[in-house]
Length: 362
Image 1 (tube, rainbow, N blue to C red):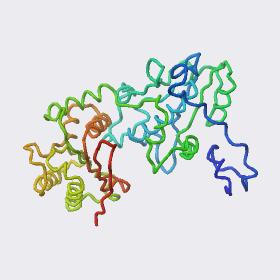
Image 2: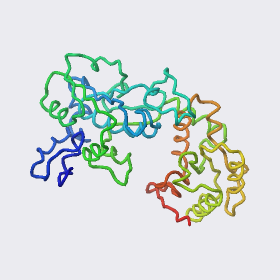
Image 3: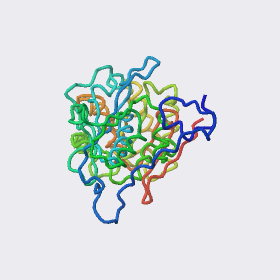
Image 4: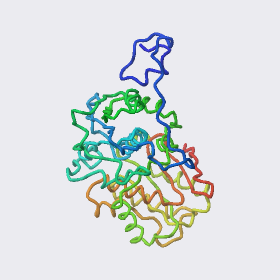
């Protein structure tokens, strides 16, 4: 049992046996500092020899009958953000297994992802001062090179090795069954579970959508006559989330009314609907409810369902999810009803940023 040692046990795999803080090992070394804007040089100048090191993300069984690849694109991108932050500092690139291994068929209507898919089909990860992607595949030169230093589940040792300025490259292998506290403690920037905030302090790591995903979103907005115009979005997650967030028609009607009362400026804007629900009766009722409400958009194109449009044109549900995210990111306001922590979240972009509120829905 860990007693009084929470400040150090997060940096180790498993639970250490020290009974009090005085028996804890020395604190881990600090991360290499970020290149500071305005200082001499350019981003990446702390890597005069390029990026010979690798941070490898290894898939492992997660217990309780859950395979290692039981994750959706959003979860994997959150991990990639953290790995990229660490790799940038350690003059490394990130080694990932292909999407067909890392993404769950459960999130793709039961179908496995094509083995021809690469991460470049979904995301674009860049380092300032580095030409090319920050991601590399499992066949990269350093992954199995016997002359390299291989470090398993030890961020501390990787930092120390990097700090020693050794000429021998290293491969840091991190397993996905590590307690997430490792990342929380490592960056000390997590706020209210906001993954994006964890890497917001590193302006030299860019994690965005691929060009093909962005192009699909552009095509959708153009086809719907929404290109260059203001619109709002609604995200209703059903499926595996109905027990956590009540998305019955009555609850959705209350949430829509609450958002429109909270942000009156959005009342006359067209709305794009995102949902994993396929029941035509439910969808028709949502559209009718939203259109009939007082203060509903007066546009002839009241609500537009996006999922079906993308599903007909993109070859898996992860691409549909990503393209939909681009469309939602461009909306001026929205309602989210998914999972417990986002069940009734209204938000609107303002000149000062994003204003948001959680509705109290019965």
